[in-house]
Image 1 (spheres, one colour):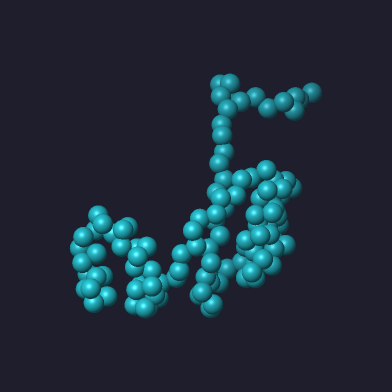
Image 2: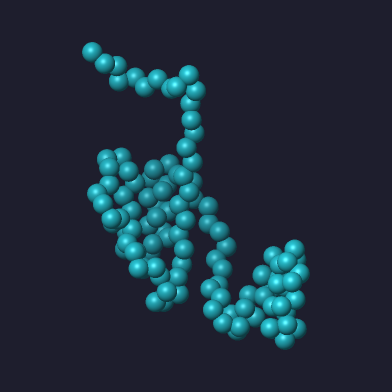
Length: 114
Protein backbone atom coordinates (compact mmCIF):
# COMPACT_ATOMS: atom_id res chain seq x y z
CA UNK A 1 0.00 0.00 0.00
CA UNK A 2 1.39 3.42 -0.96
CA UNK A 3 1.02 6.60 1.01
CA UNK A 4 -0.63 9.65 -0.56
CA UNK A 5 1.38 11.89 1.73
CA UNK A 6 4.01 13.77 -0.20
CA UNK A 7 7.45 13.93 1.34
CA UNK A 8 9.59 16.95 0.54
CA UNK A 9 13.14 16.09 -0.59
CA UNK A 10 15.46 16.36 2.41
CA UNK A 11 12.56 17.86 4.35
CA UNK A 12 12.84 21.07 2.30
CA UNK A 13 9.88 22.83 0.79
CA UNK A 14 9.73 25.04 -2.24
CA UNK A 15 7.80 28.19 -3.01
CA UNK A 16 6.31 28.86 -6.40
CA UNK A 17 5.49 32.33 -7.66
CA UNK A 18 3.29 33.03 -10.65
CA UNK A 19 3.18 36.18 -12.70
CA UNK A 20 0.44 36.87 -15.23
CA UNK A 21 0.95 39.80 -17.55
CA UNK A 22 -1.63 41.24 -19.91
CA UNK A 23 -0.50 43.55 -22.67
CA UNK A 24 -2.64 45.91 -24.64
CA UNK A 25 -2.08 46.14 -28.38
CA UNK A 26 -3.06 48.78 -30.87
CA UNK A 27 -5.69 47.66 -33.37
CA UNK A 28 -4.26 45.16 -35.83
CA UNK A 29 -0.93 44.76 -34.00
CA UNK A 30 -1.62 41.84 -31.67
CA UNK A 31 0.47 38.70 -32.23
CA UNK A 32 -1.27 35.94 -34.19
CA UNK A 33 -1.56 33.27 -31.50
CA UNK A 34 -4.27 32.00 -29.21
CA UNK A 35 -4.37 31.57 -25.47
CA UNK A 36 -4.80 27.80 -25.24
CA UNK A 37 -3.43 25.22 -27.66
CA UNK A 38 -4.22 22.03 -25.73
CA UNK A 39 -6.66 20.83 -23.06
CA UNK A 40 -5.90 22.10 -19.57
CA UNK A 41 -5.23 19.83 -16.63
CA UNK A 42 -7.63 19.56 -13.71
CA UNK A 43 -7.04 22.33 -11.16
CA UNK A 44 -5.48 24.70 -13.69
CA UNK A 45 -6.89 28.22 -13.92
CA UNK A 46 -8.95 28.23 -17.12
CA UNK A 47 -8.60 31.53 -18.95
CA UNK A 48 -10.03 30.15 -22.19
CA UNK A 49 -13.56 31.33 -21.44
CA UNK A 50 -12.53 34.98 -21.43
CA UNK A 51 -13.54 37.00 -24.48
CA UNK A 52 -10.01 38.00 -25.50
CA UNK A 53 -9.68 41.18 -27.51
CA UNK A 54 -12.59 42.87 -25.76
CA UNK A 55 -12.71 45.66 -23.17
CA UNK A 56 -13.66 43.14 -20.45
CA UNK A 57 -10.41 41.12 -20.54
CA UNK A 58 -8.75 42.89 -17.62
CA UNK A 59 -11.77 42.72 -15.33
CA UNK A 60 -12.47 39.07 -16.17
CA UNK A 61 -8.84 38.05 -15.62
CA UNK A 62 -8.60 39.95 -12.32
CA UNK A 63 -11.85 38.35 -11.14
CA UNK A 64 -10.61 34.84 -11.92
CA UNK A 65 -7.23 35.53 -10.33
CA UNK A 66 -8.98 36.72 -7.17
CA UNK A 67 -11.15 33.61 -7.12
CA UNK A 68 -7.95 31.54 -6.98
CA UNK A 69 -6.54 33.62 -4.13
CA UNK A 70 -4.10 35.56 -6.29
CA UNK A 71 -3.37 39.22 -5.66
CA UNK A 72 -3.72 41.59 -8.60
CA UNK A 73 -1.50 44.65 -9.03
CA UNK A 74 -2.08 46.97 -11.95
CA UNK A 75 0.77 48.88 -13.53
CA UNK A 76 0.49 52.28 -15.13
CA UNK A 77 -0.88 52.11 -18.66
CA UNK A 78 1.65 53.37 -21.18
CA UNK A 79 0.99 54.57 -24.68
CA UNK A 80 2.23 52.61 -27.69
CA UNK A 81 4.92 54.64 -29.47
CA UNK A 82 4.90 54.21 -33.24
CA UNK A 83 5.52 57.72 -34.50
CA UNK A 84 7.52 60.81 -33.60
CA UNK A 85 4.22 62.37 -32.48
CA UNK A 86 3.69 59.47 -30.07
CA UNK A 87 7.22 59.97 -28.77
CA UNK A 88 6.59 63.69 -28.21
CA UNK A 89 3.36 62.91 -26.35
CA UNK A 90 5.16 60.52 -23.97
CA UNK A 91 8.51 62.31 -23.73
CA UNK A 92 7.79 63.61 -20.21
CA UNK A 93 7.59 59.99 -19.02
CA UNK A 94 10.42 58.58 -21.11
CA UNK A 95 13.10 61.22 -20.65
CA UNK A 96 13.84 60.41 -16.98
CA UNK A 97 14.32 56.76 -17.91
CA UNK A 98 17.10 57.70 -20.32
CA UNK A 99 19.30 59.64 -17.89
CA UNK A 100 21.88 56.82 -17.86
CA UNK A 101 21.89 56.58 -21.67
CA UNK A 102 23.12 60.04 -22.61
CA UNK A 103 23.89 58.93 -26.18
CA UNK A 104 20.33 57.81 -26.74
CA UNK A 105 18.91 60.79 -24.88
CA UNK A 106 20.87 63.23 -27.06
CA UNK A 107 19.82 61.42 -30.27
CA UNK A 108 16.14 61.40 -29.32
CA UNK A 109 16.15 65.02 -28.20
CA UNK A 110 17.74 65.92 -31.54
CA UNK A 111 15.05 63.96 -33.39
CA UNK A 112 12.40 65.77 -31.37
CA UNK A 113 13.91 69.12 -32.30
CA UNK A 114 14.97 69.93 -28.76
